[in-house]
Length: 168
Image 1 (cartoon, rainbow, N blue to C red):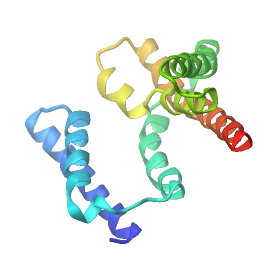
Image 2 (tube, one colour):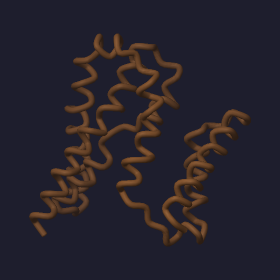
Image 3 (spheres, rainbow, N blue to C red):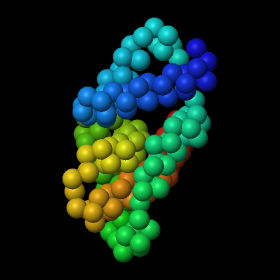
């Protein structure tokens, strides 16, 4: 299966899962997780690899696009200090905490930092899915923070990978 076929199959699965969630009232993130697991277990997808560039250039912008459109610039400016602290300091602290736990389980520090950088940022789509009942101010801070923390995590990941490369 080619990369284009994979992208089309995933897009169709996402659309069908969203439609099913709206019709049945089931949780869309859970249905997406189930659909992804089922697709991963099929033989057609077993040996398929997807380049990171496709994910970064196609899937990530599509996930973040709606959140960026529905965010209020005025509210972001009003809460800028909180958002900036959460999207940088909190991501760094979380990454270091995950790295410390991974190191305690026997991972070398460079690999533990890579794991921490991967797991540290929150997911914008997940925040939107579970935060609909929250007050507007908290929802704005969470949505914006989850959009910005990916950049912090990507920079941290690049640094951690460079440290791993130098050590190898």
